[in-house]
Image (cartoon, rainbow, N blue to C red; front, top):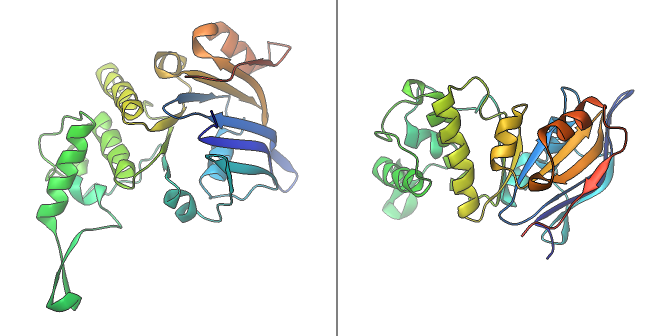
Length: 258
């Protein structure tokens, strides 16, 4: 089966610094791909290429087998690719529904569209349905985001991406600085995304989280892919060895995941 996303021989430099060197990435339908590597390995750069923030110096991107070019995040979003950054980019002074519909607010039209008003009730109802579908527990979509826990804020950010009909959600360190119970909720959210036919790329330094939810693990080191492994067929020690360079030979043990 054709991968949902295929990145082929992606290279990207910033002046004399070569951030990515001929990197390949595949992501299948309903798959969770753990993307790991030390700081500066190229993880964020690769994802910014996929989301149109950066244009690659070399390489190609395919979506469902069709070559695509993303000149901006707007292009990738229209293609169904969403990234939830570590800072979440939420407006703390807005309520939950307002954040989910930020930039794409629902409106009611009057006088043939000459006058428009925000449809607050409609947005609240749709936000509540979306969070219920993701099995997210938030007391009310009228609560301000600044009053929510870290895990709940992650859920709101993911809910916003789902509202854009995402097929791929990229999560950057979603469990950083969260309490144990909050981490469990975020990992459950990732599983729920998979159940809704959404593929996930999970960037994390927390190996226990990667091994908890990933189907496959891709390792970057110094801008190169040095490992691509089925999670059930590898160990944490093996992945850490690839990250640090202690593993001499690149491991390419995969690739089809049902």
